[in-house]
Amino acid sequence: MRDNLKVSYLTAIFFFIVAIIYANLA
Image 1: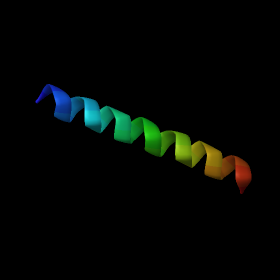
Image 2: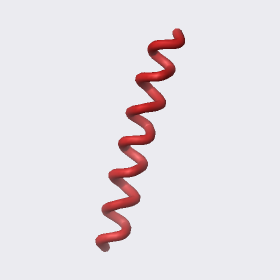
Image 3: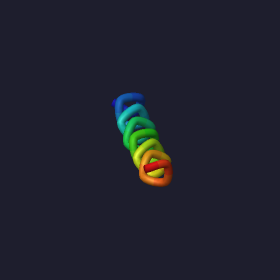
Image 4: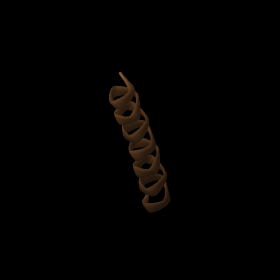
């Protein structure tokens, strides 16, 4: 359960960072 939560957080952060980078490039 703990690992699953960590993965969810990492995925959310990764997606957020990618969105910011994409917005800066657009």
